[in-house]
Image 1 (tube, rainbow, N blue to C red):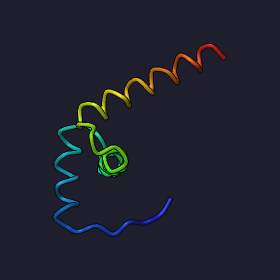
Image 2 (cartoon, rainbow, N blue to C red):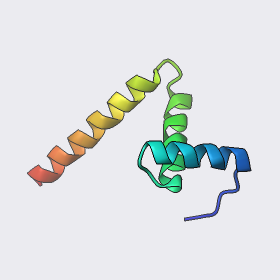
Image 3 (tube, rainbow, N blue to C red):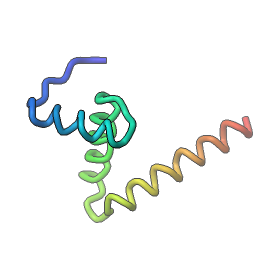
Length: 68
């Protein structure tokens, strides 16, 4: 784990979004970073496509864990 310096305005946006999404500020920032990384690697996918794929991946891991 490391320390990341972000702009105060961006931190405030993460704080507000984290309240709405019931996440910690760190979890909100991590969510945005993960979605951003996936979006950069897959520029034709929409936000909804990315989230749908992430849900499917989590479900697959849960099924695999139950089978193990």
